[in-house]
Length: 161
Image 1 (tube, rainbow, N blue to C red):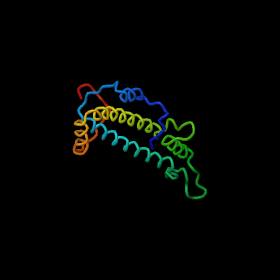
Image 2 (cartoon, one colour):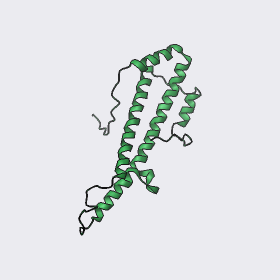
Image 3 (cartoon, rainbow, N blue to C red):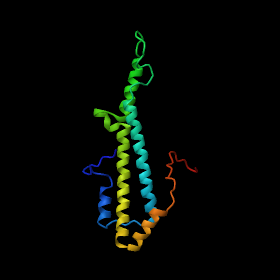
Image 4 (cartoon, one colour):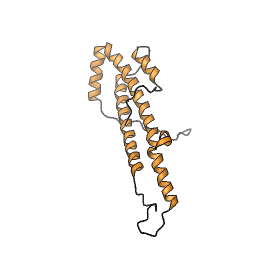
C-alpha cells in the first residue's frame, strides 16, 4: 500500500538526516521508543484497512439505489448513478481526481507516520548503537513491555473538557 519510492521528498526528511548524522538530540526513555514504534505500526495497519475499504467501494458495481433496475421498462435513476459515481471517485479516484481521494489522502498520512517511525528509529539506533547496555535494555523492553492501547485522538477540544 505504501509507496516505497524514497525519491519523493518527505516533510521530515531534514530531521531524519539530522538524526542520522548525529545533529539531532531527543531525550526520551527507551520505553517510549518501543511504544512509539508500536503505535506507528498500529496506525499504519489502520490506514491500510481504510485503503482496502476504499478499494472495495471504488469497485462495487451494484449499490441498490436505483442505478440499475432489474426489470425491463423501468428507468434508471440518474441521480443514483451520479451518487454512485461520485462515491467511487472519492473513495479511490481516477485520473485528475485521484490526488483528492480518500485512498490518496490516507496514503499521505501513511507516509508521514512512516517518516516519524524512521525518525524515532534512527535516533534510537544512534543511542543503542554506541551504548551496548542501552542496546540490551532496548531489546529487553521491546520483547517484554506489555501492549498498550494506542493513543486515542481527541477529535473535539473544548476548554475545560
